[in-house]
Length: 98
Length: 405
Image 1 (tube, chains in turn cyan, green):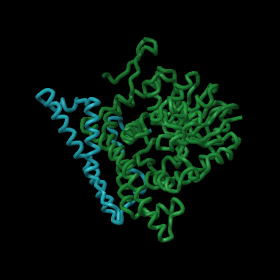
Image 2: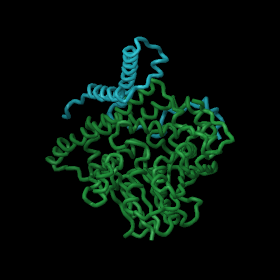
Image 3: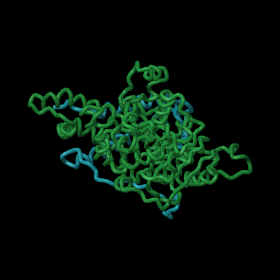
């Protein structure tokens, strides 16, 4: 039995098992991880900005608590999904195969 | 919302049963992160997968064909594409997206954990819906569960980080929602069970199972639809991993559905002979060793009552799909920590059933439509043989099983 208190559990972030390499240079595999995480963080920032703008439109003021409590409607979520899709398309612009 | 449920003098049915999943409260930014990861996952599994296939069909294969080296099987296809950028970027994005699904939910699971553990513990005592939870702390976890973190989920379904832990179940459940968030054919949890239950009811209209068993049930999400389809039946779910059983029990009690969860290895259960009329599983056999698969199917034969039915949703076997599709499916073997995937798919599921003692003429493998995306009206036409089922993973599900004499 594990006696760590539930409020002190830190879940493992690394996977047990050999990590595959897809590129000749493992640094590129590592760079892909950095890039995808960065792609995600930019989207997080952009969504926070979007929430701020929407709150300002609706109420004329904004607080951190209001950002945290903001629940997007289905329409807002659909707009955000369209943005996410287009955003990824802009970033992952693959060169034609040669 | 109060997270504590106190025992009251009222009838069990009058006490509202909190939903353990509502205790998961990601922050604004965590939700944004999860939303984005769903799209990265879709980019890989839909868009980049399509680009790779087009590149293979339009450029790579014709070029090899001209050189007299056209790939004849999935291994040759893998070799032909593994140094191509379309394959490398598809694989790298897919692998990272898989990891990010779980990473994006872990902080919120950690914060929710004390309340989740408390609720699951409470419901395991109270059983307001009439289900039960039977754990066996001395059960030895098979090596095929513990050797690798399957699906790149750190800690997979079995790891326990605190007493009465449910964390891995929550990570798998919410990580799974991120994983399928933008997938066109994984519209809701339990849709596999829902699809098979619908198919059984149409194909066997007089079938009325008294007891149902779901193997490798994890949190029972694919078992609950069978309870709705066959409300008179007693439902049992087994798994070797305690965290998912605790969590699944809490979920079922919240849904008001009586499910009996027990921690058992499907290779050898403690149920009496002929105890079940319906035995099911989903996404299960390819996660266990081939040796275990054979033992589990033999155990199904022992547990199934005369006139009973066994239906397992699985990956299509190698012989059922093209070499290119085999190459696509087998990617997971080394890249998604699913070491038994290729070996399981190389077997004919009907032959596996026959080897386990089922009648070959009453064993089957087939595709059935996904109920959420196919729709009721088209389903009727499928049952009349007027429409084919979409392929596995593209609006259909591959199933195999047997009818018991």
